[in-house]
Image (cartoon, rainbow, N blue to C red):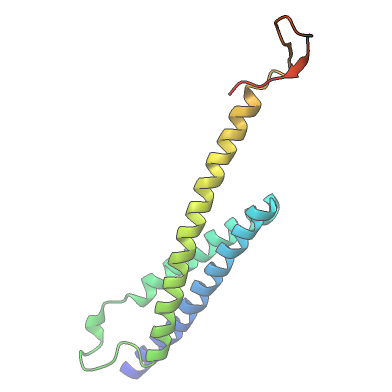
Length: 142
């Protein structure tokens, strides 16, 4: 019974690792879509991120069964290498998440500046004043 429980938990740990890696891949894909200005790719990636996040949430709930069912002398996970890989994948995902958040914040500021610029565009030509020849110039208020 305990061995089966540990094996099931190890299987879930491997599944968790795969989901972490898939989510990291989707974050990279989203950042590339932003760089390429590919809105449809970004939207698809965001949808995939939501699905993967939900799967991760459900899997964590399954994995975090009270440890009281497993005697203290038993290992929680039989495969220590899987745990190391999960820690590495988790660290990688956290770094990507910070980069993604910074990119989105920067992009949001850029979009706000562009929206402000375009909303104040009057498309008027103004003539220079003074004793010189009158020149027409294009102006835009910010």
